[in-house]
Image 1 (tube, rainbow, N blue to C red):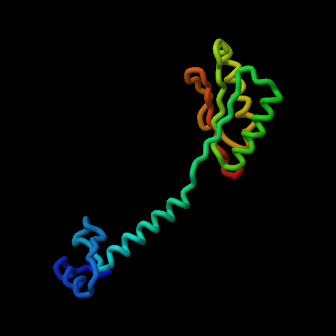
Image 2: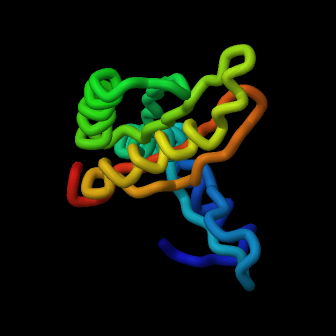
Image 3: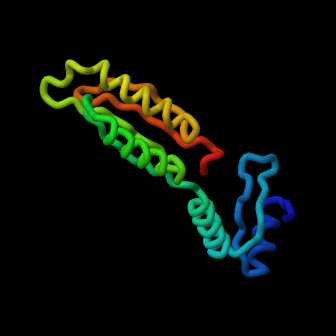
Amino acid sequence: MDVYPTKKALSIAQELGLDLVEISPNAKPPVVKAMDYKKFLYEQKKREKAMKAKASKVVVKEIRFGPNTDDHDYEFKKRNAEKFLKDGAKLKAFVFFKGRSIVFKDKGEILLLRLAQDLEEYGKVEQMPKLEGKRMTMFLSPTKKSK
């Protein structure tokens, strides 16, 4: 990559039948390069596509409880949650309060905290239980070693 004054660089690029591409316009003097611009754009898109493919997509799995969920159902859902976290997905666990069951807010919070404690080795709590309308939600993200 040679740096020439712009007019000289432009004439050299025209002689070679190439385009003059400004690499760093803010530099003093500006850095330019003689190259095929279409090829440059193609390679740039190719690099961006490769970077996008490498980026991991975040999967969020949901598990729904009721405030009076019994032990067998809890254990079943806990095993599913464990599997989701092992697979590397984030987990959104929530307790849905129907009708007047909103009275049992403390039961819902205890249930979610118990889940967080049981899944401690597979994931860490990202957001503590928080009541939003008729739902109490908690987020768990997988630990690095479980992936």
